[in-house]
Length: 123
Image (cartoon, rainbow, N blue to C red):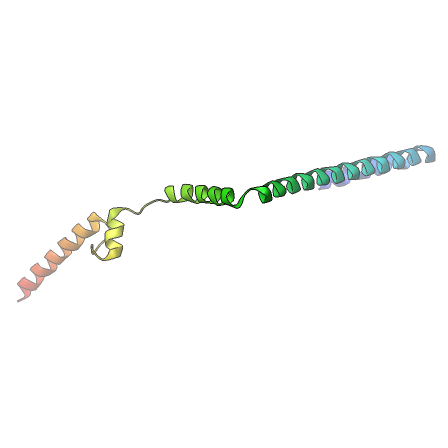
């Protein structure tokens, strides 16, 4: 930011040291450059709009059946790449397993065994 301000100050100092004819010529060049840039941007925007219109017209001209087939192909690809959950997770979520992993299952059995031993010792 400071460098930009310094550059701007240097340009202003240099511009103020120019003769009036030179300043006028410089302003004319800057205006011409700005006008050229504006025209270039307008042309770019027009080209992009024309391209978008062309793509839209092409899509609208496609038969409905072809659009439906494209849609189905896209979604079939998505379905084919949908990950399937691991069997332990399916069993856990369906209620066939009491724990999610084999380690938890073993830990649960050990805890149950330990509790049974403590209960037997207590009575």
